[in-house]
Image 1 (tube, rainbow, N blue to C red):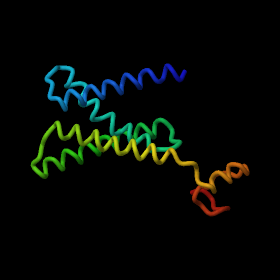
Image 2 (image 1 turned 30 degrees about the horizontal axis):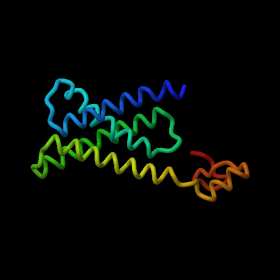
Image 3 (image 1 turned 120 degrees about the vertical axis):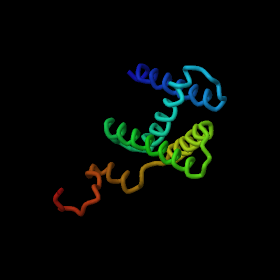
Length: 138
């Protein structure tokens, strides 16, 4: 099952990379109209979803789509505000921002869980919910 799931992820990643290269190199082809927006909408969302821990797929997809839309809208607004509209710069900025989020993910996920969480899981205690003990759930 793992192999079957990784094939679409690799194909999507390659398509996004090709879209970024086509936009950055300013290669005029009809495929660019499909692959560059794919890059702009998938890569920031995937980078943000990578930072989430233990979320259900629908929540992760929703947060990823919202984050991708927010990144692109804020970037477009900033470029218009500073009169610096450039599609190539926009693609490069989205790529760099997503790369930084990937680095944060690798650093964040590379750490071991906090000592308190590890001790609780070894004892078999339920995970902390952030509420005082005995407090009812609202």
